Length: 431
Image (cartoon, rainbow, N blue to C red):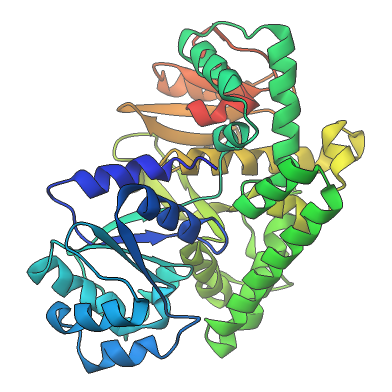
């Protein structure tokens, strides 16, 4: 399957300023697959080391983290001759070995001719522990997210449809109705399948929603296991409570995260560490309210007001036990959940595109779903789950802040009217 990170990896390989690369992201998003596929295509050989399946590896790094000492031993362990600039060295599940992470500093300083990529499912959590000596300034970093809608379409063999979507997005011209309907059908499939590579692969091969749901259940179970395995004992129950409650809060009309909905009398001080763990692990995405949409946006965020979305919309539907047919055929039974589900979808698409998202709310309750900085401009994004043309909150925002344009995502075809760029939901990846 084609992953967008592949071009990033190629650019990293060819950069004269290359440093050891850390690829982070939630479990099962395809980090190992993408790195190994890149290594096989771009290098003469790959020396692969997994610190979870081979725990004895840690002993080697405990003895010394000097590259001159490590390279000959790693060559023997892997059965691969490690050659400067021709071998890709891969450290997987590196969060299991603090010394391996620290060694990247010395590879950067004294052995930059060796190409090293490391991956870990819970690196965000691990490097925030006090005992980890993170190689600040000595590594490059990139986050891999679940596959977005574009990658899903490419995996389905729809290269021409992707090209047409991008053309219509750039020119604000409507898609031919047959193609628009076909893209909407794929979009509804994506809501159920999501972007976990294993889920995408199995669904496209079988079209079996029962097999898909089983695969998603295994991924969700692995997340719960991580919460127990890589968390402080007194935080495990709180983290699980928060994670399970995210999907409940997305069903509310006001999707702002509220501690009181976790349990009666809950307060921020009790659960903020649990939420931080979920965010650092990549399992959820947290976006803050911005009080004044001005540059830099981060200076105007309200740290006490935020929304939380599940990192993958397919896993969200699996957690909620949403029936595929209800999404595919737009059952009114889902009317109370559609808004939160579609917001979750859009958030994941924007994350893949590298945006840091915020949302805006006026003192009188007008709310714009997402605020981003695009091409140097602050742009509001309104999300509608159907072809509803009413966007009163967006009108309030436009009247107050006069953005260069606004983006409205819905099931309507492409267009541009009254300062609003109309974008179908399936084309959110174009933003």
